[in-house]
Every structure is written in structure tokens, then in C-alpha cells.
Picture 1 (cartoon, rainbow over the protein chains, first blue to last red):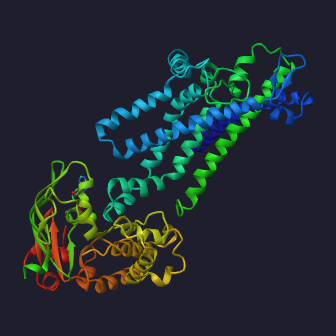
Picture 2: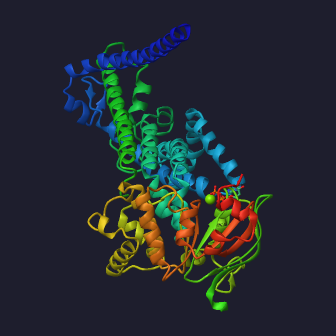
Picture 3: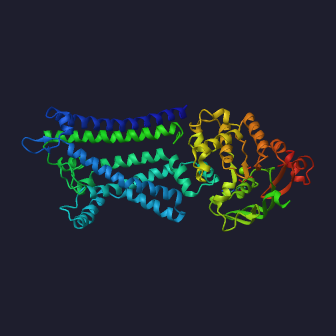
Length: 295
Length: 253
Ligand SMILES: Nc1ncnc2c1ncn2[C@@H]1O[C@H](COP(=O)(O)OP(=O)(O)OP(=O)(O)O)[C@@H](O)[C@H]1O
Ligand SMILES: [Mg+2]
């Protein structure tokens, strides 16, 4: 009887905690929307999203976040381009190729990268990479897309690598044995059996890595340069959405149009990250159900 | 006569780290015969089987002493490529292990790696292998479907077809029917009888009736040693050694 009571009590407590966290999240999202929506009394949704001028403090102000979206999009995709091959290859190396001593060093080192505070990476980008870029390519500033993408890639690599590694580890040993028994070499086995079998996990890793990059604030605030204009080359400065919010929130008067516009930018960012997570979820489920299907 | 013995092991000892899993195994396997390996769990049957196509190489910290001669050549000689060995000595595992690929791609996996690229030849090979494994009629219309959709018995026959597609000389089978129902088991036993014409088959089994039904030669193992090895009929009717008799009659501890 008491055992049953205890069981019920424990279940209730867990339920309560789960409710609290969901409730808090819900409140934050509600707050985000409540503070963001009013900007659409000033500009239309279309003007806001696609307007190419972001002059929130001018008179009259312009609230077009297209350059910010483009900025976010470019640094995210460029950093993905860098981080995916590096992250996936290092995962393959660590899980399948590296001899044990190397594995035991490489794995924690990569995970350590994940723990590096982003402000430190930002610092590095500002103090080391930026001057080098500026001198080497003779640029007006080293704080630009290339710099931000490289730093974001450094942040995304550990995410991608460790999730992809888990996916690779999960490939059944039987598949590998079957492959070797049919006269495949190690590299053939990796390329044709192990990686394809882990593809859904690897895709999830990539998408979560991208989600990480698009939401990252400190790095882009410090090294992307901050120009709210549509870039023409990879060496131009940009102002990705998180950087814009972080930089301007302090100076935007409470409940002014500028303030609402920044919250609305937050909504856009939130929806994008949500979409990334939903896609990741979908990808990992879809392949799981069909047992990796006919990949 | 020398010719008839495709595989010969000479005083083979095998170690997992410091643990000696096989002791002084000397055994000849004859061409176009079915040889059964029997013995209690953990006696080293799988270890011996995996030794014959160098699958044990994949396990860290193992080593082999002695010689395993395949067509007169030691497959553990330093100049031998294990990939080459495995192409000629195929293997079917205890648990069906098709790749998460289509039925067609499962069968063409090995041949493609070995350099066969012609689509028509591949299609012919797929049909031939599936027919040999008595699976063709069941899957001929769904070759593009994932092999994971097949039943366990079908998957195991697919794995046999996949091994046959390599046209190996020897087929190693590690308890190929232990996960299957009686009907699939009967089909696979029949298949083994057929395959004997063209292949040398070495099979591990825990099923005494199965060993008696399908094999020509039987080797009984105990604690990593080959206790008795002779014609199946002799092993099952008048074995020389008491331990063998006890095991076969189920009086074994
Ligand atoms: N990977 C391994 N590492 C260490 N020891 C192993 C390994 N595989 C097998 N062994 C040991 O080697 C011995 C023989 O194992 P093996 O798998 O060959 O037995 P078996 O005769 O096939 O048994 P079963 O009938 O249960 O399949 C056992 O004592 C086992 O514990
Ligand atoms: Mg075994």
C-alpha cells in the first residue's frame, strides 16, 4: 500500500517538474511573440522580412531584416560547408580507423572544443584571425563572412562529430563482418556499408550543427563585422540576426518600434531553429522506421 | 589424393589475448564434402571457422600459431592478402545479416567490389544465386526492396545467395539455421545437400540430427581441442572415444 503510494507520489513529482519546464518555455515563447508582433502595426510582414534596409534609428526608420537574414544564412551555410566534411570525417576516423591510443586522445580533445566558451573563439577570431586575413588579402577589415564562418565551423565541428560518431558506433557489427566476409577492404566497408547505414544519424548531426551555428550569437557579434547590408563578396562584413539583436537591444528604448522589431527578429530566428530541429527529428525518425530502407 | 584436401590445418593454436581458444588443431577438409563441427558451447567451433577465412584478424589482440593451408598455401603467410582469401572462402553467419540495402544490391555487393560491372551479367548472377539459394521465386518481383523487409528465414537464404554470388570454393556456415523455423531449416539443409556438388562446406551446428543428416565428416570439439574426427556415420554410430558418445547421446555434463 505504502509502496503504491510512494510510486504515485514520485510520478506526480516528475510530472510536476516536466510541467514546470514546459510552462516556462511556453511563457518565454508567448513573451517573445507578444513583444515582437506589435512591429507589424508599423511595417507589413513582407516589408519586414524582405525589406533590404535596416535603419532602425533613422528618421523615418526602416525595418527590413533581409540583410540580417542573408547574413545569417551565408555564415551558416559557409560554416556548414567547412564543418560538415571535417566533423563527419573526424567521426569516421575516430570510430572506425584510429588505433585505440589515438582514439582515446582525439575524442576528448574534440569534445573539449565543444566546451570552449564562444567568447573565447570570438576573441581568437578578432585578435588572431582578423588581422591575418586583413594583411594577407589586403582587406579593409578582417571581421567578415570568412572569419565568422571559420569560427562558427569550429563551434559546429564538435557537435557534428560527436553525434555522427554515435551514429557510426550504432552500426551493427554484423554489417561490418558481412562486408569483410565478402572480400571488402576496410575503406570499402566504411564507404559502402558503415557510412550509408549511419546516414540518418549523420544527417541529424549535420542539421543540429547548423542549428547551433545559426543561433550562435557571441561569435558573430564579435567577428562578423556588423554591416547590415547585403554582402557582395565573402570578405564583406555582415550582421547576422543574433548579432543584431544582441548589439542593439541595449540601446533600443523600451517598447519602441526598434525594440519590437528586434523581438520580431527573435521570432524569425526561433522559427528557423525550430524548423532545423523538426527536420532533424523527421530525418532520424523516417530512416529509423524503414530500417534505413534502401539507402 | 593430396588434391582432395582443400583446407588443412597444422598444429593450429589460437589465442584471444592470453586465452588459448584452440589447442593443436590438425584437421583436413575434403573437397565437395560437408564437414560438421560439433561440441558444447564455448569449445571453439566458431573460432576455428573464423580462422579459416581470417575473420579473426578483425578482433584486436588475437594471434595464430601453426599453419592453415588452403590449396597448399598457408593463408597466414605474410604475403597473403586476407581480402583475397575471403573472396574464395565465403561465410554465412549465425544471425542473418543482410545489409540495409535492396535485395539486388545485397547480392551484387561482393561481385561489384571484385570488379564485375556489367549490368546484364550482374542481373544474371543475381538470378542464379537466388535460384541456388531457393529464394528466387519468393523475391523475383521485389529485388529493389530492402532486404530488411524479408523474414528471418528469407534473410538467411539471401545471405547464402550473397555468399554464393562470390563463387567461392569453400563455404563456411556458423549455425546457419539456429534462428530459423523448421521449414526454413529444412529448405536450407536441402540446399546444403545441393551445394555439395560444387562447393566444400564446413558447418557448425548444435543440432545433432542436422549434423547426422547433412554431413559426410564430423569433428567433435571439447575445450578447444579436436577430440574425434571421422566419417559422420562412424561418429554417430560407433565413436572411438567415450566423450564423443556421451555428447552425442546427450549424457554430457
Ligand atoms: N572475441 C573474443 N574475445 C575473447 N574471447 C573470445 C572471443 N570470442 C570467443 N572467445 C572465447 O573463445 C572460446 C571459444 O569461443 P567460440 O565462439 O569459438 O565457441 P563456440 O564453440 O562457437 O561456442 P557456441 O557454440 O556457443 O557458439 C570461448 O571460451 C569464448 O569465451
Ligand atoms: Mg559459435
